[in-house]
Image (cartoon, rainbow, N blue to C red; front, top):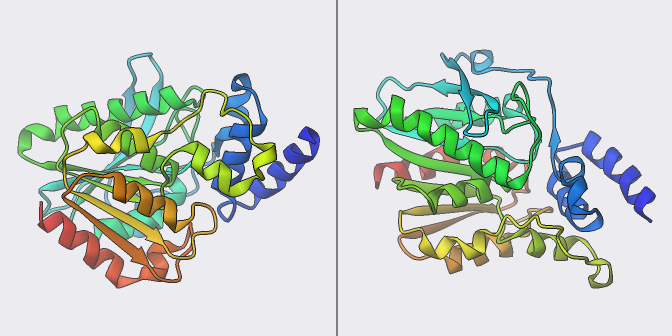
Length: 280
């Protein structure tokens, strides 16, 4: 059984993004904690695009975490911005795959800060849950030193598993706002949508438990989810929204799946996020 799941996982991840988080959930359940890095995270070391690929000026960043892991990141300024979006991507590929999404977010009038987690793209190390949280704190510390003194507002943006990273950071540090897209309550809830109950096993120490953290986050929050999300059902995003204290908004994009949401939403996606930023 394990060999079959592994073979299926290799095939499905080769064809990401359509099944990325599904295999993430499978890996969390079917493997012991020692194999977390192999089965939960699917990094790509080849960064095929940069912000300049879509005409954006950017600054290349090298950051070092408190456990001495060097991370690669980009800072994309906006000439008229008083807001920086700190972006945390999903668990497959790298930030180069998010360049088209970054272009849309830049159209909201915000500057952008994005990092590759440890083990992704040109970042060193190996990914694990606590490490991703530490990477997020490192990115926040860079913003605090470089941009925070200028009176800019910081808004966290997380997609899929990156939503859990953003929620964790928002529970630790003060931020102006939080945007989570196509994310979930916790890893266990995602797993239950993928596998029969008889196959469920303990999550081997991997939790990404946003449901346990969201109640303590008091900043304005925008939850975005596709009505046809085939990986993380929309009901999980709505459940996280319901657990969250106000102020909060839920933006359901009709007809959108897990990975095509910004493009299905079209111009309204930019408008909705811009309006949220203006309300802060």
